[in-house]
Length: 522
Image (cartoon, rainbow, N blue to C red; front, side, top):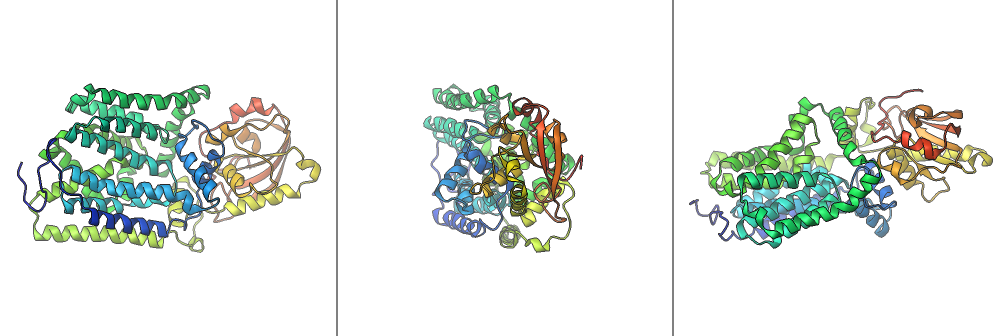
């Protein structure tokens, strides 16, 4: 296939050389984006999930109820090197975001794109709301998105080079990603289906493919054993995640949610999808179509979180940029494209500079679960100090004899993680929670017949047992507080549970996050 000179240097086929990599342009985009994200990296207060990652890191395990061990290990490492530093905690998320920016350009080059499409692809990813979100806080999706994109790039590169070490590397990347989320085995299965349907089927016949698959399978053994011995909580988390996403944004609003994470640059993603079906140079990579189609279908039709498909963004931006570079572009089209790039960049910079808003600007209470996400984006998490100080004051007001042997039990894992982190250098007693992954960190000892319970619902409801004595000690209910943190929360003193903790704990365990926007038994 012939293309115009100056736009793409050579046609993309499995045997041709590639254009030069746009080191200067792509490095500039990555450096500017990285510096911008770094400048605001500690402006948001620590999030509930980040507190949970720190707590999980202090309870090392080969698996957890809701994730793999890699992100807690990163949190533990940051806490060891720089205790209390939000910069250190979030730096891995920022680095993975920068890698995804560069990877978008690398994929454009792999598709035969010269300097311009490589630069456009890098800018497109760097200015998406998804990149802004990915770099803002430590999360499982911040790592998973980039590792999924790396996996796709390795397979794309194999199509051109037939270098089998790439297939082994792909298996290794998938094995690492499995330590983050359970999504990657599904992605690998769909990629294998795509190869079987669209080719190149030779990939599946290579011993290196099966060696890579063996790496993934081997990495899964300790995780699956842990899940088996603990009742497979990770499988149940799928339904919980879907329920939480639907509560945040209904299934019918999924297209709008996708627009929110792609921004104006989503137009280039659509071009990339079209290019994947129409461009001759992209025909060797049709095996990626099922992964993208099924991912989008899961988000739009079944209400899964939009970042489940974000691992395809670098490749789609690359495909779109290369496809447009192949077209005869009029002056008007060039002006419109430049204007769109300027708009996406301005929005990205504006969001990073302006957010989070000061809490003094908060005027409306957060009364519904769907408002929690928007509040977190606009104002960030809050209320941790308030929660910890009140619980600590309540504990210290108890007579010394009542404090002896007492433990703290919280209804949700955010509360437990906050108390564990903010008060770990104080004399507060051990903290437990039957919620989500925290439930597997330990069970209160049967000798602990007195507990200080912190929760939204009353202790009998939340812990699914009855106590001989329950006394409401303190309400934590700031009108504009964060639900479940310092709004709609109470502290109770409970004694003599109906059953020993070792018996009642399994029944009290709950994967659903009790968010605090609904209250029972108060």
